[in-house]
Image (cartoon, rainbow, N blue to C red; front, side):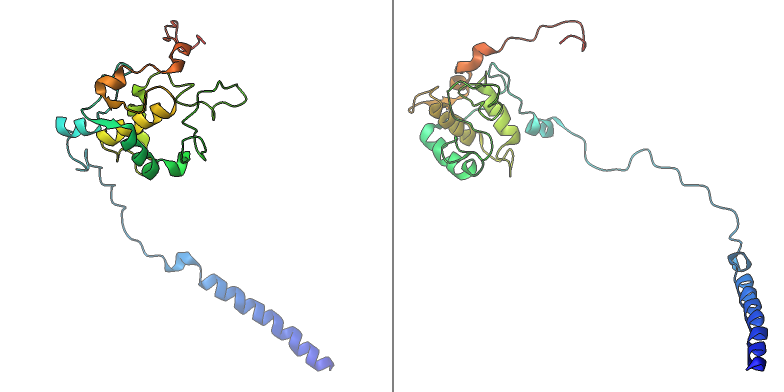
Length: 203
């Protein structure tokens, strides 16, 4: 037994030494190959050739802003009955069958709202100042799943329906650019022009 232990004790240092040699021989710098000088980076081009120039016709497709006075409204017209069909097909899923249920913004309602209820209870009938903003906003952002997909006639029609449901116009109205520009919403008097001067520090 004693001789066996001595043999083991002699073998262990030899094994440790062999392992150390193996680690020394496998150092990465022994196998490194000199690749020569590093090439200078290639300069970026001044342009990448993406896209095409925005000509007047292309700009006109996106230049759809409408002012409070109706400037920018396109040709077209729509009735309340036509608007009911548009609303049912393209708007009711988000705003409810009558525009009062949600789950998203409530669009119909003339009752006063308090701070605790805002902004959810701010409707076309009790908060919006300009009817023409409806055309501008719908054209840009609605329907949510396909903004800008409604035609001008469909947009006039759904606005006619919304205004009628808010008691702003009669059910027999035919809404076009001139008629929409002449609509005065009930909450218009709550807004005044921002004529402050002095920069961003003025509140």
